[in-house]
Length: 288
Ligand SMILES: Cc1cc2nc3c(=O)[nH]c(=O)nc-3n(C[C@H](O)[C@H](O)[C@H](O)COP(=O)(O)OP(=O)(O)OC[C@H]3O[C@@H](n4cnc5c(N)ncnc54)[C@H](O)[C@@H]3O)c2cc1C
Image (cartoon, rainbow, N blue to C red; front, side, top):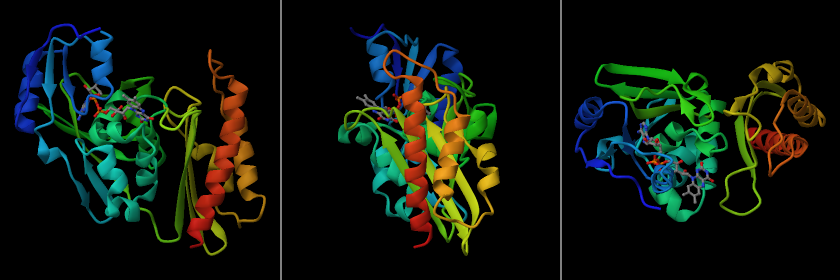
């Protein structure tokens, strides 16, 4: 199929894009990498009246070190994130996850802003943003606001974005000294979306766990940060059973649904296995 007719605009600045978006009304859409919206247009799952192409907004394609955080512009491609030495060193979880998105060609076009706005429940970047509680900066003609990932993702492919808003950039916290991270994903074929994916960070204070974070995708409508489940496991001295106990607790707490492809019990099994694997690797990295 081919897309329904739409008017096409290619603004040369963010200001112009925001003006255009406000002028076009609720049925307009912005397009970035087109790796999700393109197929939706072709299948007529999206039929916008106007399409506003962000690809000339080079001001939105950057990775900056701001001290405690990395700021990543919305138009930064998945491959630029995966290959950035700064991201690999300062936010390795993000680089590890970006490297596993789809295939090479998709990573050359797809953008972080597009991935977060699309909000696929098993996509890699929403999972990392949720696990690390990234801050998403959003702009419109009326001003700007910043939302933590937990408030941004609302349901399957549904976010807090209003029709006249554009994601400008995302702030990710940098990895701490004595902190290790690991990203684990299970899919049937290389490049497929995950069935279940897990992101984990473990920070050590000597032999004691000072902070542990686990994020899951594939078990709920939005990526899940397991902060409440993990509270009893923080502050403990790590022994051989620690990662296994955490993984069992996470498994017990998740309630994925059966679907036509995958049984819920299989997703629970995968969750336990991947959480344990991620924690063991993160711990070993934290120890250096
Ligand atoms: C074959 C295939 C395999 C894939 N596999 C994976 C995978 O394994 N994991 C994964 O995570 N993704 C996967 N993707 C999706 C890919 O990551 C997309 O790049 C991503 O979902 C959307 O980014 P985009 O820049 O292409 O956005 P677009 O497709 O251009 O837009 C997607 C949505 O975001 C909105 N949008 C875009 N930019 C902004 C912005 N700055 N502010 C507000 N709204 C915005 C658009 O209006 C649209 O609603 C795959 C895609 C394909 C085609």
